[in-house]
Amino acid sequence: MDAITQAVFESRLYRAASAEEFSTFFDCNYVIVELNGTDLDSPPHAPRCPVIGVGDTSQLPDYVDVAVASEEELAALADAIDQSPVAAMTLAQLLRANEKLDVREGLFAESLAYSTLQHSTTFEGWLAERSPKPPKSFTDEAVLVDRTDDRLLITLNRPEKRNAYSNDIREGLCAALQLADFDDAVSSIVVQGSGAAFSAGGDLDEFGTARDAGIAHASRMTRNAGILLHAMRERITVRVHGACIGAGIELPAFAHRIEAHPDAFFQLPEVGMGLIPGAGGTVSIPRRIGRRRMAGFAMTGDRIDARTALDWGLIDAIVDQTP
Image (cartoon, rainbow, N blue to C red; front, side):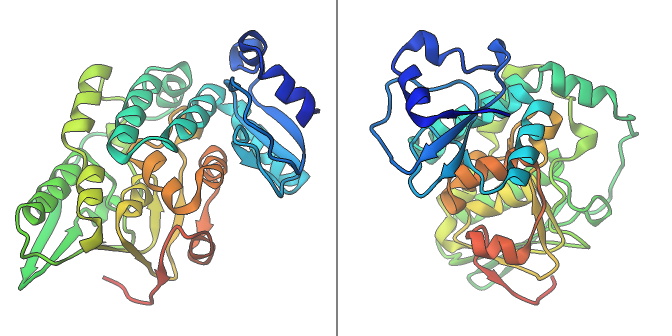
């Protein structure tokens, strides 16, 4: 893992032809840049692969996607990128773009990228290693809604599946949020999850079932809980506990306030599957913790606890309260 100096790297970004050589397609899954502590004018071209900054990271040039402080961090990040180089490359480019886009435009870009990666070789390989499970049937509502005066309580209600973000959870959550969107008398909205976890992320039993990328994109942009959460964010508090994985933190991050039980933990495992966060996380989470921390968090798939999440600004408070 040899590093290139900042001066040499930047000189290569002044030519489109040399900049594009920093790409998985040129067997360059990432580039390590030895920084010198100066934030010079941004060169006109960008590398295609993730850029890892080492050395003097007191000032970070715009092209740096992730900064690491130790050899151990560097090794872990490089290994994770090597496992899913196309997903990592796509994530880095998307986060750069979303830093300049508004929420709706960012969600549109994320959905297109996610749809593309659903048909990637890495994701297809991940799917092939899974044993298909028969669908479960439920009699209870996937999402419970309780209105008391001007307060709306929304509860994800698939505790048997740790409230995995399935189609029925998505439909129920969107329907509940639409009720509040049409009723200005609702001044307070609380979202929580029943059982041992707020949400263990996307329902893995449904992964790979969308075979038409265009229809999947249209569906995400039509029934999008992230858009609704963002539109009403000032009224929304999300109370999380236990597993908050993938969509289980991507969606709460849109809200004005996240309160976490001390047992809460957070993880974005999608890159390891050959995907990127696809429930709005490339838009919502960077607005809380920054683009570079988001890139490292998502590329490595590391799990963090509630205290770390609070220190990062991913959550707003640790509250010892269970639903």
